[in-house]
Image 1 (cartoon, rainbow, N blue to C red):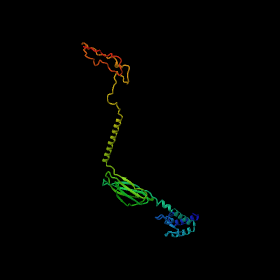
Image 2 (cartoon, rainbow, N blue to C red):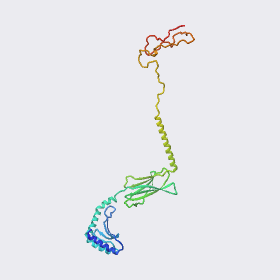
Image 3 (cartoon, rainbow, N blue to C red):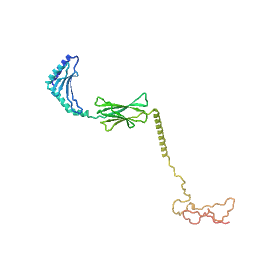
Image 4 (cartoon, rainbow, N blue to C red):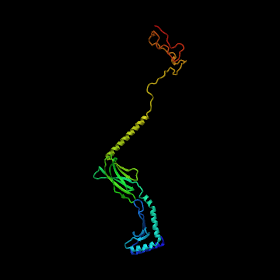
Length: 319
């Protein structure tokens, strides 16, 4: 701003302050209204005194005009005449107007054309006089654009749907809510389904009633019994796998003490090929008559051929 401009504003401020009680604020503000299709709806450049518009810029004629028609109207006319002779003020207003024209598309893209997905939360509110039902409130917030569809589902079936009241959040987003009276019976699932242009598929939040104290005790007991059964089964399987494996059942053949277990012909007589003593006479009795060879006195076969008579054989005796 040129020094003359500062001097003019200072002088006007002092004059206005002398006529009014207390301090004063003199400020400038510019705005660029956008239409629904994103085009620039106009341009405003204003000088205000204590938040009251004093001078307004007319872009068609590129001049400042008095826009206060109250007690300060004459001061506004005097100030407009001085400022219109200062080209710095017109140049500043035109620079603001050009910036609005160039940046309007970017402003529109980052504001009106943006898409912000919503957030969903279900809040159950108990009903004091009806313990078997509950008031469910589905809160939806932080979404843009404002168009949104909310549905309530019970076990996958739509039970409530409709338009809701939209409220601005103050940050270019909106919020709304939809309630439903639901049953607290076990086995039911209620779902809040939200459709919005920023989502590829509906955003869903589920709510199920809590188990009653009796059902919680039954579930805890069943879980303990199941755990104990699994522990016992595991111990039994482990004990069975660690059991030692014994020899196969059934008698095993035992080799004869006097025989050679190796195959083939033996030239040397084994222990069984030696003389077998024949039973001697029984004490107190005479010789027993023998009518033929004793079955146990004959030669015993051995694995190999025997040479010579068996010394253990007894001669034939006759009565």
